[in-house]
Image (cartoon, rainbow, N blue to C red; front, top):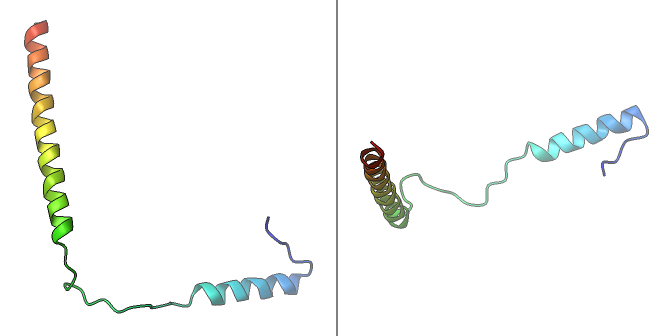
Length: 71
């Protein structure tokens, strides 16, 4: 449960303390854009796109056959 301040000045102090702690940026490492190895992500994306393409074609063929059968 949230704790409620008893005095108005204590509530302001709590707000200032919370704001002071949440606005600090903590940098734990440095990253240079463009240096990360993304071969695994690229393979996963290609596999996913191949799957989606094949499923879309399969669904289209299925719907076409359904339309032909039902007239």
